[in-house]
Length: 218
Image (cartoon, rainbow, N blue to C red; front, side, top):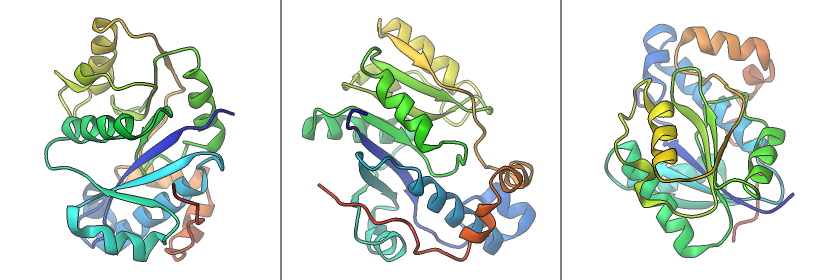
């Protein structure tokens, strides 16, 4: 499989600041445990030959992230602004540094496996863009092999229009693209219960906050 760089967007694991919709139902501590377990599972699915960068928020949270995930990753702060500005900044910075394809992901989609990541990377040998749609109208993965400055423009972020508008923008720019299977992010109690049914190991990961597999950095 070709090499690629995966950029994962994560928040610092602070009580009350992660999985707030889920916390409204199951409580802040249980939501924090769920968040930690989801991230741990996602990091375990990163293919061995891929670089991984943890793009963390807030800006000053690097020490918290290192204490949580360990020293085996690259850490970079997310910029201020909406999601589109964050994605654009990370993508531009990546291609200023590297000619490897870039995959942008979050930490809350337990169905995103190493096999699916590999499929996305391989697809970028043929297509300029690879996108994994989520059931809420957004996307759980965006892969590209160059920086396209206008790709993140004219998108209603945090709405059910994100995927459709991104595809419209992709076609407007004349980029070739391919789509992965639709998956579900964990955002509320219903999706969390379903994730635990589908991936029983998530419950065991809740208490293994520092167990993410260490990986070499650049």
